[in-house]
Length: 260
Length: 159
Image 1 (cartoon, rainbow over the protein chains, first blue to last red):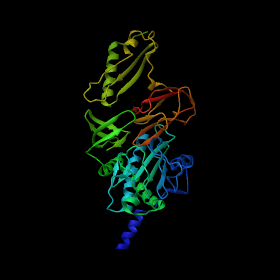
Image 2: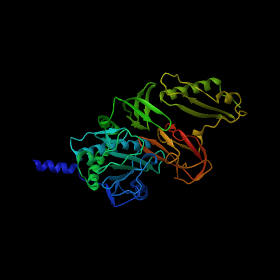
Image 3: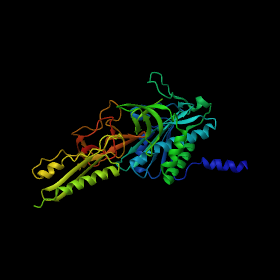
Image 4: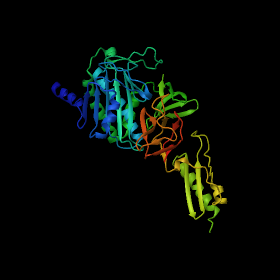
């Protein structure tokens, strides 16, 4: 009995079919490497770097890389519009949540901060940055960059105060996991979530995301370059936008930094 | 030169306004050619997404077109209809530079190559690099750094 369970469990976390895997000892940034690979892409490809020398985060912020941490990009050719491509933000967050849950076990206190920051015990354990390449109304390539603090959390002393202080898997759980091994979990989980999106659309992804959302029903702050919007976090709409009930009424926010 | 009746225009504008409401659009611009020197240009705009506000039907250039179609000066050009307009593929936030304080991707007067990044529209933490649809010159930049844009909003004009 236990044998067959093991086999099923192994299948669940096997490397997905039709997906390529590149493991590089060092690269500037996996998203930059993805941009270089894009013209030659024949199948969805994960690019894992054991070391990033110029890791990037949102809006030019640098992503501090520590040896033993996970830094990878999935490069794919999404079908559909740019709005559809952006739904991968939620697919990636769910996949990462699932992969971390499998690794850490049921005791893991995982949640997702809109749209795609995965939190472990309330701290930021991972970051996701998506970049579409060479597309107007339809996106030709999408690079989904994912960084996970497997070994250590970056030092944030001197930086702006953040809403979810960085934590690491090792620091929170004592677990040591090589990045190559974690990639298999993540690739398998992503393939499952992506298949769900392709088959059923955003509905089930949205539902699953909402079930894992941090601070739903509570008052949060969304900060854009031009305004600060405070409101009760009601839901996300069918494009994934953050829906806040503010003093001036309901607002759907497609892009912002969230604070709570 | 046979003039089309005024009621036709009124009915036409009325129909556009209904179309606007029915499809939950915020703006609709149509040019109707009746014949030589006889055309009607209508722009119907719904103001403010606030639910309480009643839709405002502004048939801006229509009266001029009706009164003296040929003599009327060209109405303020609608950038959305410009053949060189680059439209936003999604609702989101515009960034004219890769990061705050950095040199913008392009400036007015710059020569750009097809496929070159003009700006970024962000939604759901997805950075959409908006490429030049063709090689040419950046004629106008219609959005401000950090501003919110709607789907289909004109961002730049490249010709």
